[in-house]
Image 1 (cartoon, rainbow, N blue to C red):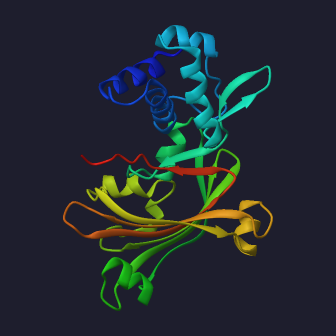
Image 2 (cartoon, rainbow, N blue to C red):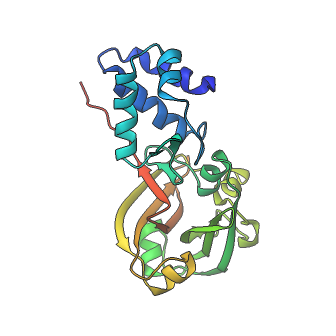
Length: 248
């Protein structure tokens, strides 16, 4: 067994008030979110996990059952337990699409339907706190993981932050960091949607399929808004997760 999962479980040991199965569940989920366990990867057997982690097989079963119920893991009769073939994006961390996929061993790429400079719309002006007449870089792109379409994105970035849209090939955040404008915090909203005809066609799913719509505004260190992005994800390929903790 890769020692990463063992170390992740040991890091949870400080939470002595949590049952062992919950600590293991968090360790597995964290390893997946951080890319240490990739989509389709097999977990060790219950017997091996119990031996290496020094817990009972009942604890192992209880931890795995919760993650199977959440769709994070899948179990195949006679074959074992595997990381679900879905992309898990943590809501509690400011990450990029490109970074998420690279961490999971997938090859991210983009097909641009729009990449231009234009005058800010009223919606963009409000979202980015810009004055009427200001210029923005506007992107509309289909995002792929290897050869599978996973998401659609519409982004607006103030032109005084990114002067040339042609610099953006894959990761917007890598360009922002190279320009000294790395995002340091974000506000985002997630909701369930049914994909319309255009979205379904581009994402290669039936019209009306379940999707996830994410709206994000990011800020750089000096407080300026650097990005207003609306994304539509395939519901059968993506999970968004957040870990919540009770305040004392």
